[in-house]
Structures are given as C-alpha cells and as structure tokens.
Length: 379
Image (cartoon, rainbow, N blue to C red):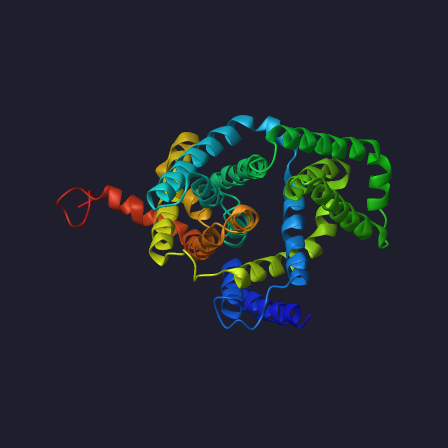
C-alpha cells in the first residue's frame, strides 16, 4: 500500500507540473516509474497487488475506446476514415517493421514493435487540439478520424497477437462467442441498463465498475483477451447512454491509468538486451514517419502539404496504446524500447503541436525562396 501511495503522490506533483507548462503527463509518469523502480533507485517494487490495480487503468482505457466507437459514425465517414487510416497505417507500420527487422528483432517482435511504433496517442492528439485551439481547423476532424481508425486497428492487433498462443481456431471461435454474447446481453438489457444509468445515486457507478470488472474476469477465466472484451463491452453499452458511461468511468480510468503508466516504468529493465542506440534510431524514424504520413494524408484529403504538417505534428506522440501493446505482448527488451519511444515522441509531439503554425510558416517561407537568392522570390 505504501508503494501505491508514493506513486500517486509523485504523479500528483508531476501532473501539476505538466499542466502548468502544457506538457503531456504520460512521459513524466513513465520516467518517474523508471526512477523509483527496477532500473532506478529500486525503492518501489512491482508486486502483484499494485500490478493488478494498475492493470485496471488499461482495462478502463480500452472500455473508453469502445464507448467512442459508434458504428453509425464509422459508416457515415467511411471514406475519410479509410483513406487517412490506410495511409497512416501503411507508412508507419511498414517503416516500423522494416526498421525493427534491420535492427535485429525477430519477425514477431518486429511486428509488435511496429504496432506500438504506428499507434498514436489519442489522448495526446485530442488534448493538443483543444489546448492549442486547433479544433476549428479542417485538419482537426481528419486527426480525430485517424485516431478512430487506429482504435479499430487496435482490436485487430490484440486479436492477432492473442491468437498466437494455443489453438488459433478454438481461440477465435471462443472469443467470437463471448463477444457476441456480450453484445446480445447488453441489447436485451438495454432498457433496464439505461434506467439505472439515469439515476442520481451510487447505482450507476456501481453498475459501470461491476460490468467492466466482471466481463474482464470472465475473459481471463476463458483465456481470451480481456482487453478485447472491454472494448466490445464499451461499444455495446455506448448505445444505452454513452455520455453517462463516459462520465461514470472517467474517475476510474484517470486514477488507475496513472498507476498503469507508473508501474509500467517501475517494471522496465534496461539491463537485458535493451540498446540505447536502437531506441534512438527508432525514435528518429517514428518522428519522421508520422510527419511523412501526415503530409501524405494532408495532400490526399486537403490538397495541401501544410495541412499535412498540422496533421503530422498533432499525431507524433505515441502513448497509452503503444504502452498497452508492449505491456501485454512484448518482452522486457521491447517494453524498455517502447518506453523510450513514448517518452521521446510525446515530448517532441507536444512542442510540434504547440508550434505547428510556426512550422508551417517556416516551411511555406522556405518554399517561396528562389534558388540562389537570400531573400526569396519576392526579392
């Protein structure tokens, strides 16, 4: 219990500092975990109790992802989502996979690393749009739909990695049956669930917490991915009262997610096969690949490379989902590499998003310069 109290106190201080300077808190939580954990001062061990509490943060995060997935919206904006998502996927996943292979990782490790390399932080992207007052820009909607596409891909990636163990056919059939049962139960109980969620006492919070914990516990008993069950549960319940569920689950998500990032950092071990040079190369490539995919999306949807710079700058940061994939499926080396990747890209992405207008002005100014003249075309 002392470990959790210390972790929360440190996170409170870091959250205040990050908010004061408009920086993403996630990298600071990870750094704090590394500092007090196995690779640092080793004053906070990661015991089973603390790891369980921190895993709840991941579960509620994925439940929130499900709440944000509305099939109707996906159908209405299918072309925009598909075009931006496919460009983002192909550029970043291919670069990440090729780089990991060339840097010595095995094919499966490379794919896990490439998946973490590809997925941006939805929380960082949306919060940067809000904090930097970019929501009025036409590129903002494209960024939001890119995040939706990545959330959908997250489901497929979790399913793919989970199916590696055991009999794939049995795993797929059992998972499909549980997911279908989850959707069916929610639909049958839709009216009483909505009635409970409209109450003003403690029942809505109790229902939300019980539903998430019970469904993931069942998934663990059946040895299917609890992360996938949490996403589908959230998507199914969104049709009852998505706004209420978002409000009810937010306190659980925010507190437990902080613990998840800290204890992820605590478990990081740099003494194994981790290579700082490999991590640095991947960080540089991750920044370059997101900017490249952003520019391509800007050209494809907005007809402008400057729009692409805005998109790339706001999607640079990797975060919660990259950490989740590394924590669930990665080895110690991959987890350590992804931790550095998240810290570096989220910090660079924070500044890139804040100063994206200046970056676009600089690029447009450089493009207007005539070759061989110091002042540009106007001169």
